[in-house]
Amino acid sequence: MRASFRWLWTSAGTANLGDGITVIALPLIALAADAPPGHVALVTVAATIAWPIFGLHAGWIVDTVSPAKLLIAVNAMRVLALTALLIAIAADFAVYAFTIAAAFAYGLAETLVDTALIATVPRTVDPGRLTAANSRLEATINVANQLAGPPLAGLLIGLSSLAAAASGAGLYAMSALAAVGLALTHQRGGNPGRESGAALPLRVREGMRFLWNHRPQRELTLLTAAMSVVWGAWTSTFVLYAVAPGPLGLSPEAYGLLLTGMAVGGIAASMLTFRLERLLSPAALLFVDTVGTVGLVLPAALGAPVPVIAVGIILAGSGATVWRIIVAVVRQQATPPDLLGRVYSASRVISWGALPLGASLAAAGVTTLGMQPVLWIASGVAVAVSLWFAARLPMTAPLINAAASEADGNG
Image (cartoon, rainbow, N blue to C red; front, top):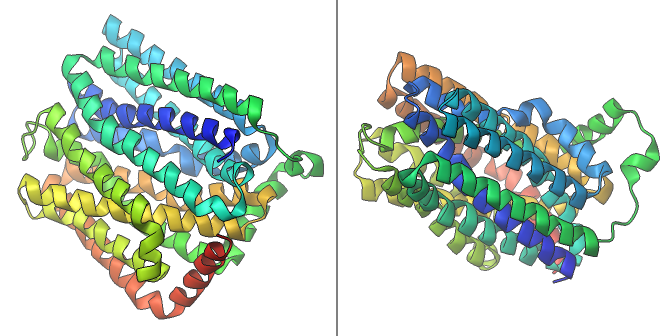
């Protein structure tokens, strides 16, 4: 791998460790500040609302601005947001308000960082190394964001909310420094978005139009959106279900450890995706992921014990990783380089824009219906999505498999 990819990889790894700590710590900080259950669930809404609001703009920004400079600036913004939260916690002043602000800053930064990462990978590796590069990034993200991050967040919260916020800020600062290394080694060829002089609305529409006209990407985007409703509901409510005084009665440390199951499944999947594609078709692997989403929410709805819930989390993590790798390679191969940022952000606006919808509905549901009915509704949606994909497989599988095979052909 080139030096530019190694710096990008390092920046992504340190930032994702910060993400893994921050995204778990923020709801726990809200709990520690005695926020009511509905308000705790709103932390997830704040962390995910940036995609539908800002996501399309992230695409044209990434297609126009140097990715290294963008990563430096965005990570600096995250450092400032967590530093402000740190001060609020130390002063015991408006902690919940600063938690919401930090969650929104986290989500806003994610729109830019994730888009920049996907758009920059093809410029830092040879076409034949795309699957290897994406698998390496996914493995690192799983280790940092989901294996190491959650238990660290639980341990740090066990020490103090200050320790959790300070650790996140420090890791984002390290990610910004790695992006400096990327700036020194990455030679970007041309800047189509800036040279064209196209009006902003036209630039944005180009990405959305390409996505909608490319049937495999359109189908996968809509399916991801449907599953994201379930993931948003689970993410916003599971902390209330798992951490004492919730039904599972876990400590913050045990809660963080339970969530590492997602990383265990994800790491295994990132190492096996290439082989699994040859054993099963890419479309079949994607269907298995929809079944994994059912396993994410149904055990909690049934009131299953912790080991069963842990198995469901592992399966969901493995399926989600396979999904991201296959979809990323298809998108990188099928999309012109000068449109990649906009196409990626357009797909994220639709797919990840459903996360705050699911989180908001779950927050309202927990307040009005209670925890268990919300989990049952989420499970029903997950089953419906899996059946929907199964029904469409005869039509969509040939398109998805052909797109994935084209990508593999370059390796």
